[in-house]
Image (cartoon, rainbow, N blue to C red):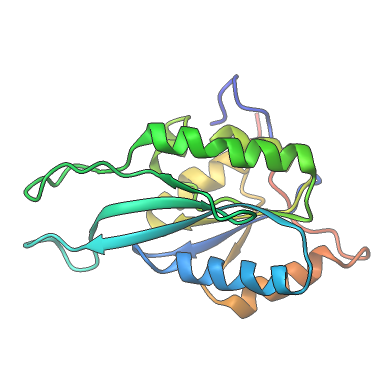
Length: 199
């Protein structure tokens, strides 16, 4: 449920999430899509994730600990470190929430610039807990700016609760993102949007 400190996403905001299952799936799709739009002159702002993944010995199939993670400003390439070095034997989450908080300035600046599209690298565990990029994602939705993010399958219920079940869910394929984007440009199509949860 959205917190009192989080702006409620408005009903006119076209919001979409790349739904994926595991690390390293959504990132290259988002990157390729953003690069396509930028090559066409579309004003895209926001953050993409760049990660080096080390699978831990004895880890379950498909699980991984991301040892080095950065968020990259899609406008100017500035990088924000969002991982902590916890040591080779550590199985704790290495995400550095302070790094994500520092990178959130990119989305706040994007809100001021009113671009054609904002991309947020993901809606994950720390957003579910009320921090990370949660407020910035909600503010973009409330402002009616198209926003694209990524959501792991395991967090789908929390994402749907945050969006009132009204966000578009996309497979991790560039063509699917292209089709969604074309809808945003059609005045005769009312895109599904993220709205406040039902009382």
